[in-house]
Image 1 (cartoon, rainbow, N blue to C red):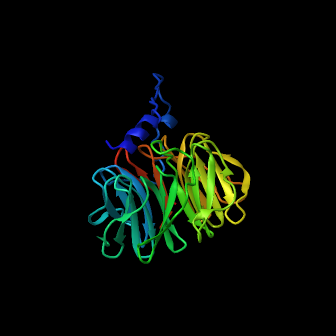
Image 2 (tube, rainbow, N blue to C red; image 1 turned 120 degrees about the vertical axis):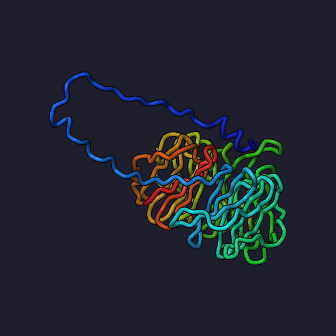
Image 3 (tube, rainbow, N blue to C red; image 1 turned 90 degrees about the vertical axis):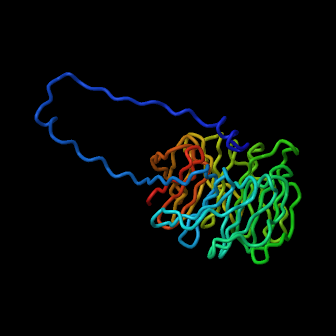
Amino acid sequence: MKFLLTLLAALALAAGAGGCGGSDATPTAEEQAAPAPEPESPVDVIDVGAAPTGLAISDGAVWVVRNQGDTVVRLDTQSGKMVGEPIPAGNGALCVAVDEGSVWVANMYDDTVTRIDSRSNRVVGKPIPVGDQPMAIAAGEGSVWVFNALDGTVTRIDARTGKVRSTSPRVIGRAVGNPDFAGIAVGDGSVWVVSPSEGTVVRLDAESNRPKGKPIAVGAGPTGITVAEGTVWVANTDAGTVTRIDARTGEIVGQPIAVGGQPVAVAAGDGAAWVADRAGAVTRIDAEPNGAVGEPIPVEGSPLSVAVGDGAVWVANPFNSTVARIRT
């Protein structure tokens, strides 16, 4: 098992056991009546094999990174079935981002990014060198943005040419050899990077790839982050909360939203945010100001990443090698 999966296994929550009871009493006629059918589960479980750690959605497809074997597979969003053959990525393939026409995969042991043509399912060109141990990737503002965990920098790749345009200075503060497992997102003219050890989000200007303003204090141990419809959503794993940031002003919106458990990833769209809990559940948060929280939806395994698109929420579960599709 690779390093990341070993780390997550040590942090994963133990699952509880359930049971049921009975009675020796003679049932009444009403009790003998057939029970009402259970409501149909909104969750489909898709076996993809090989420890899926990241996923992204575009062009009617879910692109799934499989960490064991370093490949990417394409799922049809309607049928959930695999399309074509697995596509080779680099050593330590971990996470994925998409833009128009391309799929980008961060390879944490190669210190590279692999580019895949989403129309042909073929790798484009040679691996693109980035910083030390790339562990998060996002696409937007005409570029692909890669967070390099060991040197704490962000590499900007031109989405058209595939060439590196710039590398930021260190933006979060762990020393080399003790990486911060940060997330990254892009939107509204900025790039947003979380620092789990410092409990902050760093904002970079998307034009200069340089920090903009002071780090924004959120909750304890933030990891997941996304930007949608003018709001930055941050999953604070150690605090069991989600923080909202105004993407225009950089100001915190309201109070932290309690979701419980260990929220490790977040995706947003269509008026809601969806938060994946490492313990095996996904929670919906209404994007309206009050941020109403729905009941957790159980999923198998220990989720690591989440995406929203094509009428569903998609969850990667590396420990049982499945992707969960929650119909919305």
